[in-house]
Image (cartoon, rainbow, N blue to C red):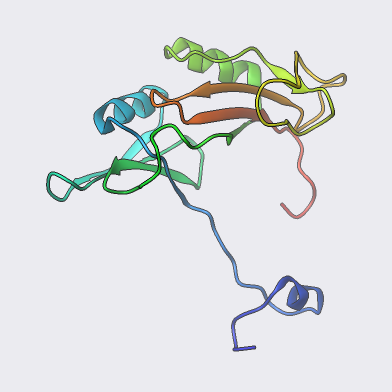
Length: 164
């Protein structure tokens, strides 16, 4: 294996690993200005708004406290607007985050948990209103969408495993 490239097997053998940092997600939207207004309204910082002609525009926004950003634009995705689902925004207090979004004019679901445990199933069929008993970390969700229907989940995480 070439120098500098390691797999998880290499890490187990005491070797260095290559870091992979997810920093940008591209969301397909129909109206870039409408999307930009929405993300700014919910508190995302606009890092870049670049137009390279009538058929290319990149708007780069970042959620508060996040190392990962979102790009919306024209000519940046072939996906159908609104087709991205289950993007997790991790929060320490889901009640506070939900109230903040509602205060900014966003329709947000009630807080729910999954009937089978910590993570959620696709769709809404296995959602149970309220918190899991004991309100464990990773167990509470609330959902909302951007104006095109790209779907987000707030997920409350208050405690993580060591090494994270």
